[in-house]
Image 1 (tube, rainbow, N blue to C red):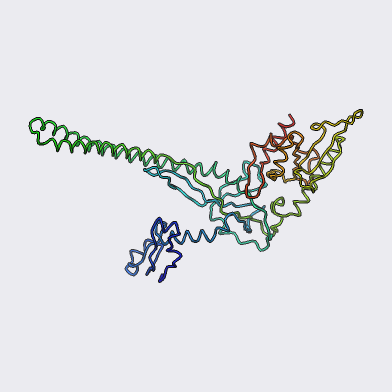
Image 2: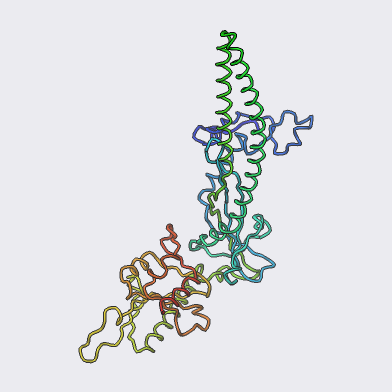
Length: 415
C-alpha cells in the first residue's frame, strides 16, 4: 500500500482520535498472522480491529453505508415453501471496566427469521447470520416498499438469544473475577503480612534506636498504600461482574421468496398497494353488512381522513328522535389483515380514538379476501384496551399492535 488516503488520516475520524493516525504508506499488510512468520513477509503489518488503519477504513465504510441502514432487498430461496423475512441486527452486551467506564464485552451480527404464516410461538427463529450468502437476488421486485417494522423481531432477539448471551458473558466474567480475586487476595495478603512484620520490627527497634523512626514511618506508609491499593483493586474487580443488554441495531431486512413467486405477493398488506386497498374495501363491506344486520345506518367517510372509516348510527327514539351520543353512535376504524399479522393504526387514528373515547370502535376483519368471518372482532375505546400493547414506529408515524393483543382486548371489551 504505497499511499494511504488523507481522508483515512483525518482528525475528524473518531478512530484517529482514539488510536492515532495510520502511517502514510505501508510496504505490506496482511490479515493472516502466520504470514508474519515467513521470511519473505517480515516487513508485513498485521491488520486487525485494534490497528489504526483497519479502524479508519471500518469507520469510513460505515459512513458510506449509512443510507442503506434499515433498508430492504429481495432474494430467492430454492428450498423454501413459503415467503419469509430475514432481519439482520447488530447485537451487543455491555459491561464495565475496572475504572467504571462502559465497554462492549460482546458484539455479534445476528439474523432473525420471520415466518408470517406460522403460529406466534414459532413465528421467529434464530438463523446463521451468513444465510444470506447462499441466496441469489430476486430478478423482479417492486420499485417501492413500505417501511418494514423490525420491532417485533428485535423484541424476540432481546428476550431470547441476547438474554442467553448476556447470561453466558456474565458467568464468564464472574469466573474471571473469582480467579483474579483469589490470586490478588493471596498476593496482597502475603505482601501485607510482610509489610506489617517490617513495621512491627521497626517499632521494636525504635524504642532502642530513635534514628529508625523515619524508616518506620515509611514502612507504615507503604503498608497503608498496599491496603488502599488492595481495596481499589477489589472494588475494580467487583465492577467486572456486571453484564447487561447492549444496543440492538437493525441493519437490514431481506424479503425471501420461493422459486417462481413474484415479490409483489409476499406480505400483501405491506408490499402491494392494490391488494391492500382491496383488503380494506372487503373489510369495510363486512362491517357495513354487520352493522346493517343490527338495524344501524352506516356512512363510509374514510375518504375524509378524519381518523375513522365508518359512522354508524343506531335507531333514534321513535317518540323524541333522541339518540344517545355514545351508545347510539359508533365511529368505526376498520382494519382488514391476514390472520396473525399486527394491526397498524396511524397517529391520526390513535389520537382520534383517544379524543372520542367510548364512541370510537376498532373493527378487525381477519383474512378479508378469503371467506372472512361475518362477525367482526370489535374493540370499544381501543386506546383504553390496547395502550399497553402498542409499539410506536416514530419514523413512519404509526402504532403496531400484535394480533393476539387485539383478540384478547376484543374479548375484554365485550365483557
